[in-house]
Image 1 (tube, rainbow, N blue to C red):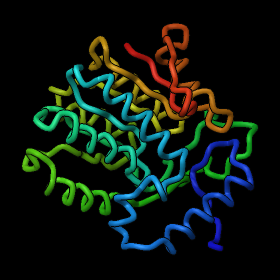
Image 2: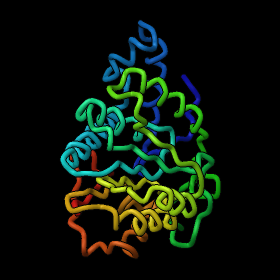
Image 3: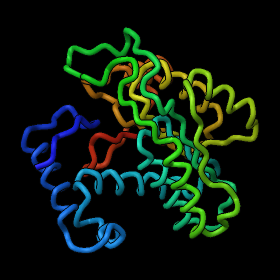
Image 4: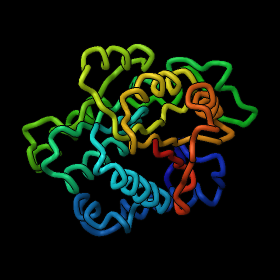
Length: 253
């Protein structure tokens, strides 16, 4: 059995869930075929919760297909979300060269934790440097490979913005005054960057655009909820969710 590494999991994670992930990883290594063969049969090897997450993001993307603007992901982590949006765009709208997928992350963990983020729930990741994954160079190579196969691959689709969101978001907008946002996916986890993202991008979101939340109402991550209350206001939102992926909630503007 493999060592169980700490990963970013929902607060209702149980010992049985941990065993499931370990045995699934062992099974992936022992299953017949090369890595690419296994990826082609990804439903054999992917955790069921991640398949549900992919389906939820697919439905979000389909909801903004006719909405002009780019996809903003706040909190890239290992890049599964950014590449989900990028692949969906390449498949569902191969000629839409205007739509960009823009991911913001420090790629060095949390910059800081404020009082709005503090929770009574146990959360080992809630600290400066928490959830650090330096995936920036890896994702740059992933995008280069992705563009080989993608229609209009010579026109950039994915942008990765590295740095503290409190500084990188204003700088990006200043350098890209043409920016329109069709989907804002908030996965910063913390109060300050989430609030900054909402306040910066919301004026650039037309009617029909979607703002989606990854930790809204989660006891271990109160900062996201506080940021939404202090910027958008919960009373102003008609929150929706997918029954098969309750962690992701969203509002159509």
